[in-house]
Length: 100
Image 1 (cartoon, rainbow, N blue to C red):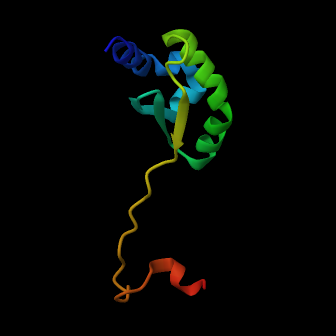
Image 2 (cartoon, one colour):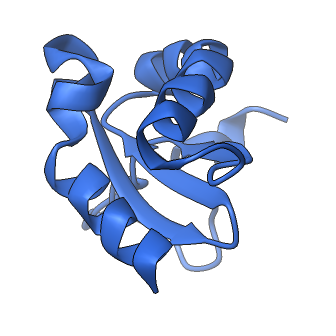
């Protein structure tokens, strides 16, 4: 439980550890068995964080102890809900049904 307690401290200090710019666009969500799941606010930041992941793993292991974080799983933003318009047909796929 010590590691989990230290990890909660990392969640609280996330912008300080990863930098203000990265911290403004990312949020740590869960940490289970060495796997840290981080959510980004755009797909561009998801790509950027994927490229920065090895550096972040090294930085977090300096903070938490060697081997604490083994992998960072990067998730993009939640999918937007598309409202159903009044001209929607039953069983259509929405705006994609004209492509294909």
